Length: 312
Image (cartoon, rainbow, N blue to C red):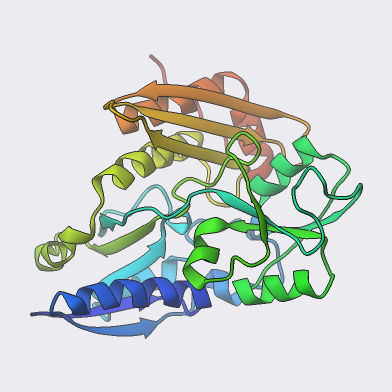
């Protein structure tokens, strides 16, 4: 069998994810090596993600390694992968999704609603900040960067009353001890693609694509394609306060999509819901509905770009 070279960020969670894929590939007879690649996002650790404003900040250097044929595949958290994949690459695999929701973590409070007035909450995500402020405008939202262990240490030391993290990452690392509440999408709509891994390869690399094909999960590909189509229609990246969660409907070919666009201060929250059988079409449709209600103004405020509604 082929030797496959995986490129990965060096964070604790990224390495877990890449080693997880490597273990599955080895169990299927492949020799696998791992190359750690430091990305722009890893180098800038003292600035909130929204203020960096670079699309692909966690993928650019890894894609360069792919182009230079130093690696054969890259394992990404799908939510970090830009919605427009450059022509030189292809998204060969989207793995079966872990829990897509956000989690509320605290030492002293059982739920978000019980959190004290003017409590300090740590997150560097504008999406989370905006939705928190909409629910609880009294809260003090403070920047929180670093790997999962670093963030948990800051919570345990009393620097924060609570922090919000992706449930999937905590599950993968076995660090769920301080999870007090898994937040519903009505309270905290997650990021597009959250909980899924995306495996990127060079475009046209049929041999690697064939080796990886068994890892692709059709249901997750459908739901995340829907979410990413919405995000793409709005012209947003992971730094913009946009949430999207598509879910399969039991005994039906349809998906249900929940989407949110919000001002960072929570003063304006736009929500849309929709049902459809074509994932990409549904995502674009709900994106258009949000644009008609003024989502482009919010995106412009944060990102400095306007998503222009398409003509029917």
